[in-house]
Image (tube, rainbow, N blue to C red; front, top):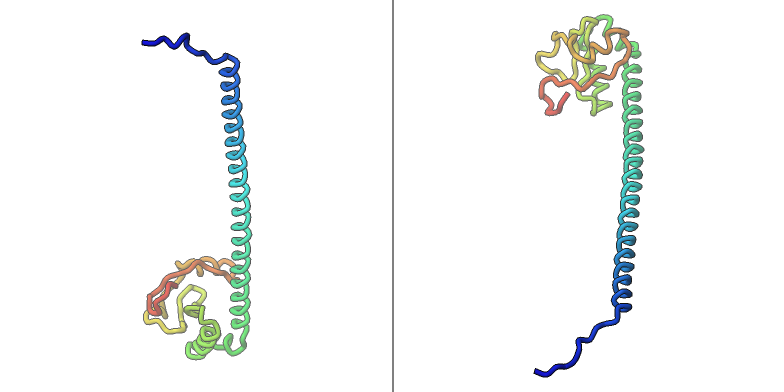
Length: 170
Protein backbone atom coordinates (compact mmCIF):
# COMPACT_ATOMS: atom_id res chain seq x y z
CA UNK A 1 0.00 0.00 0.00
CA UNK A 2 1.39 3.23 -0.93
CA UNK A 3 1.51 5.91 1.62
CA UNK A 4 0.39 9.07 0.04
CA UNK A 5 1.58 11.11 2.88
CA UNK A 6 0.03 12.91 5.74
CA UNK A 7 -3.68 13.68 5.50
CA UNK A 8 -4.48 17.04 4.03
CA UNK A 9 -6.17 19.30 6.48
CA UNK A 10 -8.17 22.30 5.51
CA UNK A 11 -7.29 25.51 7.06
CA UNK A 12 -9.36 26.33 10.16
CA UNK A 13 -10.11 29.82 8.88
CA UNK A 14 -12.09 28.45 5.93
CA UNK A 15 -14.14 26.19 8.24
CA UNK A 16 -14.86 29.13 10.47
CA UNK A 17 -15.95 31.35 7.55
CA UNK A 18 -18.20 28.68 6.08
CA UNK A 19 -19.84 28.12 9.44
CA UNK A 20 -20.55 31.84 9.93
CA UNK A 21 -21.78 32.18 6.34
CA UNK A 22 -24.28 29.36 6.89
CA UNK A 23 -25.39 30.92 10.17
CA UNK A 24 -25.83 34.32 8.49
CA UNK A 25 -27.79 32.85 5.56
CA UNK A 26 -29.98 30.82 7.95
CA UNK A 27 -30.60 33.87 10.14
CA UNK A 28 -31.46 35.91 7.05
CA UNK A 29 -33.93 33.26 5.90
CA UNK A 30 -35.51 33.15 9.36
CA UNK A 31 -35.89 36.94 9.32
CA UNK A 32 -37.38 36.91 5.80
CA UNK A 33 -39.82 34.09 6.63
CA UNK A 34 -40.80 35.76 9.92
CA UNK A 35 -41.38 39.14 8.26
CA UNK A 36 -43.35 37.50 5.46
CA UNK A 37 -45.52 35.71 8.01
CA UNK A 38 -46.08 38.91 10.00
CA UNK A 39 -47.03 40.84 6.86
CA UNK A 40 -49.37 38.03 5.83
CA UNK A 41 -51.07 38.01 9.26
CA UNK A 42 -51.42 41.80 9.21
CA UNK A 43 -52.83 41.67 5.69
CA UNK A 44 -55.30 38.94 6.70
CA UNK A 45 -56.44 40.97 9.72
CA UNK A 46 -56.88 44.10 7.63
CA UNK A 47 -58.84 42.14 5.02
CA UNK A 48 -61.02 40.63 7.74
CA UNK A 49 -61.70 44.08 9.24
CA UNK A 50 -62.53 45.48 5.79
CA UNK A 51 -64.83 42.56 5.06
CA UNK A 52 -66.62 42.92 8.40
CA UNK A 53 -67.07 46.66 7.85
CA UNK A 54 -68.44 45.99 4.37
CA UNK A 55 -70.84 43.34 5.68
CA UNK A 56 -72.01 45.70 8.42
CA UNK A 57 -72.64 48.45 5.87
CA UNK A 58 -74.64 46.04 3.71
CA UNK A 59 -76.64 44.86 6.74
CA UNK A 60 -77.42 48.45 7.73
CA UNK A 61 -78.53 49.23 4.19
CA UNK A 62 -80.81 46.20 4.05
CA UNK A 63 -82.23 47.04 7.49
CA UNK A 64 -82.95 50.61 6.38
CA UNK A 65 -84.63 49.30 3.22
CA UNK A 66 -86.81 46.90 5.22
CA UNK A 67 -87.77 49.61 7.71
CA UNK A 68 -88.69 51.95 4.85
CA UNK A 69 -90.84 49.23 3.24
CA UNK A 70 -92.57 48.52 6.56
CA UNK A 71 -93.25 52.21 7.06
CA UNK A 72 -94.65 52.47 3.53
CA UNK A 73 -96.96 49.51 4.20
CA UNK A 74 -98.11 51.10 7.45
CA UNK A 75 -98.79 54.37 5.66
CA UNK A 76 -100.87 52.58 3.01
CA UNK A 77 -102.83 50.66 5.64
CA UNK A 78 -103.50 53.84 7.61
CA UNK A 79 -104.69 55.56 4.42
CA UNK A 80 -107.02 52.64 3.64
CA UNK A 81 -108.36 52.80 7.20
CA UNK A 82 -109.17 56.46 6.57
CA UNK A 83 -111.42 55.76 3.58
CA UNK A 84 -114.89 57.04 4.38
CA UNK A 85 -116.85 54.15 2.84
CA UNK A 86 -114.48 51.61 4.36
CA UNK A 87 -114.93 53.14 7.81
CA UNK A 88 -118.71 53.14 7.35
CA UNK A 89 -118.64 49.47 6.35
CA UNK A 90 -116.61 48.67 9.45
CA UNK A 91 -118.94 50.67 11.73
CA UNK A 92 -121.98 48.86 10.24
CA UNK A 93 -120.05 45.59 10.30
CA UNK A 94 -120.98 45.20 6.63
CA UNK A 95 -118.83 42.24 5.68
CA UNK A 96 -119.60 42.38 1.93
CA UNK A 97 -118.63 46.07 1.64
CA UNK A 98 -115.55 45.60 3.82
CA UNK A 99 -114.37 42.68 1.68
CA UNK A 100 -114.56 44.94 -1.41
CA UNK A 101 -111.99 47.24 0.20
CA UNK A 102 -109.88 44.34 1.43
CA UNK A 103 -109.86 42.91 -2.12
CA UNK A 104 -108.72 46.27 -3.52
CA UNK A 105 -105.97 46.40 -0.92
CA UNK A 106 -104.90 42.85 -1.72
CA UNK A 107 -104.90 43.51 -5.48
CA UNK A 108 -102.91 46.73 -5.05
CA UNK A 109 -100.34 44.89 -2.93
CA UNK A 110 -100.00 41.28 -4.11
CA UNK A 111 -97.16 40.72 -1.64
CA UNK A 112 -99.80 41.16 1.08
CA UNK A 113 -100.87 37.57 1.51
CA UNK A 114 -104.17 38.14 3.24
CA UNK A 115 -106.11 41.18 4.44
CA UNK A 116 -108.57 40.78 7.28
CA UNK A 117 -110.57 42.69 9.86
CA UNK A 118 -111.04 41.72 13.48
CA UNK A 119 -113.17 43.23 16.21
CA UNK A 120 -111.65 44.71 19.39
CA UNK A 121 -111.76 41.27 21.03
CA UNK A 122 -109.61 39.82 18.23
CA UNK A 123 -112.35 37.85 16.47
CA UNK A 124 -111.91 37.90 12.68
CA UNK A 125 -115.10 38.98 10.89
CA UNK A 126 -113.89 39.72 7.32
CA UNK A 127 -111.01 38.27 5.31
CA UNK A 128 -109.82 38.43 1.71
CA UNK A 129 -109.13 36.07 0.08
CA UNK A 130 -111.70 34.02 1.91
CA UNK A 131 -110.38 31.17 4.02
CA UNK A 132 -112.91 28.69 5.38
CA UNK A 133 -112.97 28.59 9.15
CA UNK A 134 -111.12 31.87 9.74
CA UNK A 135 -114.16 34.15 10.07
CA UNK A 136 -115.42 33.94 13.63
CA UNK A 137 -112.12 32.61 14.99
CA UNK A 138 -110.42 34.52 17.81
CA UNK A 139 -106.93 35.78 17.13
CA UNK A 140 -106.44 37.36 20.55
CA UNK A 141 -103.53 34.99 21.21
CA UNK A 142 -101.64 36.09 18.08
CA UNK A 143 -98.63 38.40 18.14
CA UNK A 144 -100.35 41.05 16.00
CA UNK A 145 -103.25 41.32 18.45
CA UNK A 146 -100.99 41.38 21.49
CA UNK A 147 -98.96 44.15 19.83
CA UNK A 148 -101.81 46.32 18.57
CA UNK A 149 -104.30 46.05 21.43
CA UNK A 150 -102.49 47.97 24.22
CA UNK A 151 -102.50 51.31 22.32
CA UNK A 152 -104.65 50.53 19.25
CA UNK A 153 -101.88 51.93 17.08
CA UNK A 154 -100.40 50.38 13.92
CA UNK A 155 -98.11 47.48 14.74
CA UNK A 156 -95.92 45.25 12.59
CA UNK A 157 -96.15 41.72 13.95
CA UNK A 158 -94.12 38.60 13.53
CA UNK A 159 -95.05 36.38 10.60
CA UNK A 160 -98.04 34.26 11.52
CA UNK A 161 -99.04 30.98 9.98
CA UNK A 162 -102.62 30.02 9.21
CA UNK A 163 -103.83 27.46 6.71
CA UNK A 164 -101.65 26.65 3.68
CA UNK A 165 -104.45 27.53 1.25
CA UNK A 166 -102.28 29.72 -0.98
CA UNK A 167 -99.10 27.70 -0.62
CA UNK A 168 -97.18 30.36 1.31
CA UNK A 169 -96.33 30.88 4.95
CA UNK A 170 -98.39 33.51 6.69
